[in-house]
Structures are given as C-alpha cells and as structure tokens.
Image 1 (cartoon, rainbow, N blue to C red):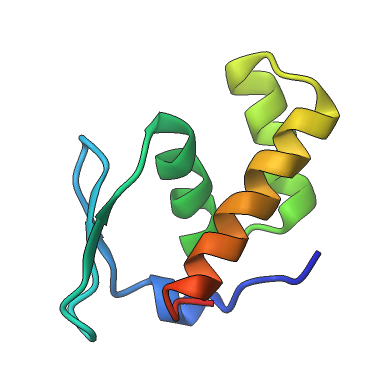
Image 2: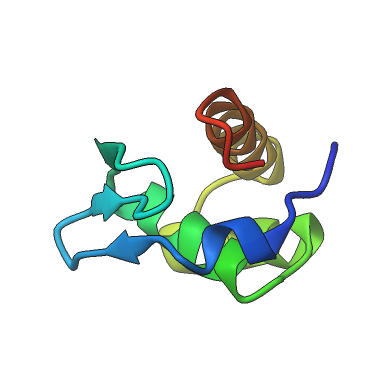
Length: 83
C-alpha cells in the first residue's frame, strides 16, 4: 500500500466531531471516528503498519478489516488530492 505524504495533511484542521477543513484548497469533508484516528496518525507520519495496529487495539477489529479501512481511507485522501 502506498504511503501518504504527511506534510500535505498537517495543514488540515480537524474538529472533534470529524469535520475536516483543508485551508489550501478550501475543501471540507467529514469523517467518522475511525477516519479521525487514521487521519491523526497519518498527520503524525505513522506508518500504515502502526496505524493498522492502533485500529486493532482501539476498535477490536481483525487485521484484514483494519488494513482495508486504512487502505480505503488513504485512497479517499488521494482522491481528494491530499495524498
């Protein structure tokens, strides 16, 4: 899975409710609790493996499900021009 460039994510403003604002493009989007965790870890330049482990621990999900969640989220970020 491709890694994300964390420097593109650091400017994002993220509220506690999952509202995300990109001041560079002016775009906004919402994310759920899992997405907020993934985004926070990506902003901290964590590896995909570290993020998967965190999801497994926090949400008690299987490895494959956690990997799929991260992969889908990264794909969406790239689709939004943030990857």
